[in-house]
Image 1 (spheres, rainbow, N blue to C red):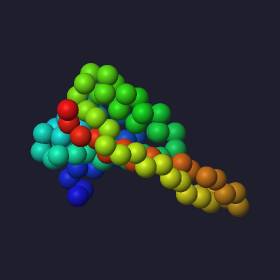
Image 2: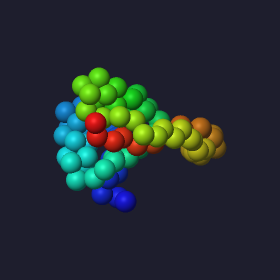
Image 3: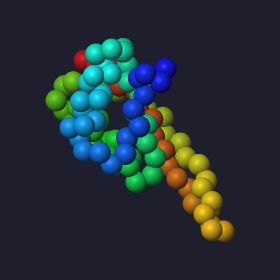
Length: 86
């Protein structure tokens, strides 16, 4: 199922739009994943694609995990959104 998975990071919207639409042309659904500070980027990408009437949201999963760094523990949220082509 890796062929329909996209990890969202710090690339620009047009890059992710092209990747997502290309994967949707080959698969029935695409899964977007990210965590931490990149959650904003994922939400923005999905919002724009929805507004342009290109995708629908099938499922959203929100979770998180503890991350330990130099004797401190941080909670890092993550999100997974499954999209289907309209």
